[in-house]
Image (tube, rainbow, N blue to C red; front, top):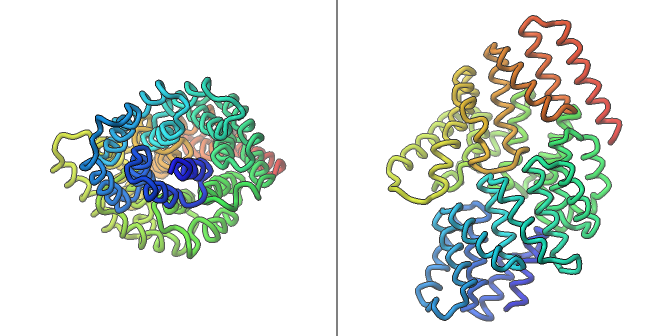
Length: 455
């Protein structure tokens, strides 16, 4: 049973194989295996699918009802407590319990990998970096999953803005384990945040065999490849990736896959580029997934698809259903309630207003929360679609001074990004600074050419 659970961990860190099957096999061999019971609870939530979470809740309840936890080890009790909180929707509470496990048992890989994913879901960059970073002292390069932990640490460093160190640690992780797709992901995130899109594309191309097959994380990494293509001006390549990988006939059936296609198409919508019937196809699947409420970050992507498909009534119904849920919700520790109330709903309403052409209203919803977007989860790269929506709304509403400031802020953070220079030029044109705008627009072209030359 221990071997089966360790196989599940190995599958999880490499995003491959049948994780649930390994856990079920462990429990068939030992139905009272507390850590396997906890991990089954965790993975029930980690896919962000309400149906899977409900099934995992029933399994864990049955186990807890028949188990005398006083006979378990303290670490086992803590894991069961964390899994119970996670299944109850208390993401933050689960995170804290897992953090205490990692402090006492820094070699507990389950506490690290699950806690790391929860930190991502809650947008907690500090814990995302420190949880693994604080445990690395107890690991050596000879340990089975040390390279995977380096990849996780690199991602945390990137989300904390420590790009130089993130790149160094991420490249070390990939050098030690070329199949570490999370490490590859961390490196590409770092290239994205540094505006090194040509180098990021080349990094992907040099490792195609390592990340494109044999794992189910390849879809998300293809999404990053498509983002590089957009920055380098190759919209056709981005759409080809969407159609061949992100939303092919046999893909896009779960939320974590579907949101990548939705976000990619929304980026194209912001630029006025047609995407055909892609939003319609996405919306047809999102309609099956919006009830019950589960994760505000997914709601945002559903609304993108609804608005893009012209299905305003579906977007409005999702928003209203979340408002009704919040009105009837008793005081609780459900993380998604605060995430929805304070961030998710304002973002969804802003997207709806953007689709209606009410750009000033879109700005009013987004501008006050732009520095708090991390609170409803995701990465910098994923949340950037919201900031791009805000910037585009200011331009379309003629708020050129604000657009100038927002685009200048982006240029300061990522001076190599052609997109940032291009939007800054549009804002300056709107303010009548045509000569300066021409210089900036030329800078956008030069940066795009420089990026392409590195591919």
